[in-house]
Image (cartoon, rainbow, N blue to C red):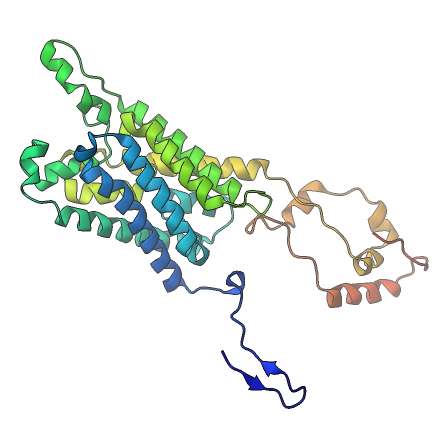
Length: 340
């Protein structure tokens, strides 16, 4: 921080760090933030699930780890990249008009890399002595317990498999049930994100709301699919789990993307178009004929920019003055224009 004394005024000249909102981050910085955030998120979910046998297989520990760590990741680097950490969220935000389409695929790649790196860390530290306790023969088989699946591979099917040995039938959810659940929970999750991050939202704790929502939705979807909501999380488990996980992975890529798209389209359909407030100069530039002509609602809606969840910025005062000068040369009656 410089302390140079200005010769003219004799006061200290201090270099003040610009506000975070005024900083424009490059693509590399944003991709690094997305990779880091996805790494943290998958570390919490897949990492906890890897050794969840020590917690008697309870989902509450996985949900808490995922929800709390996503809060931390959003608070840490959300201001850099937007804090998506999930291909479905990126798609939803883009469809809602809050992100650029040119960033979609790069964000997806960064998220897959970050999630896979977290899974690689957890896979590498599995001790061979743990396999007998988990009643599996390979690390990949143990890691399949962290993967998303339906039917006999869903947590409900695995937990009730013992019923088949006693003459009963295990609880197995169908593929369509898995698709429906993943679409719904992801749509709710992305809808909450779009709502609490809107400029019209009064929520002051968006990371907390998002983290708690993720944890709750993981608990809801867990018996049916082991709770994906995130294609990057599902891909990370399939890479090291192998086997049957590859055959069912498409469900946990497609369904979350569909759910995110539905949430984004719903938000866009019901998002109000803000009214345009005219300045004194702009009002003076409007002719009498234009003031009395009925407004074309479709044209007004088209003039608004929904990319940043708000109206286009008001025209500069210089532009307004120029239009006012042009209007003064018209043949319209002169006189003081009423104030807006």
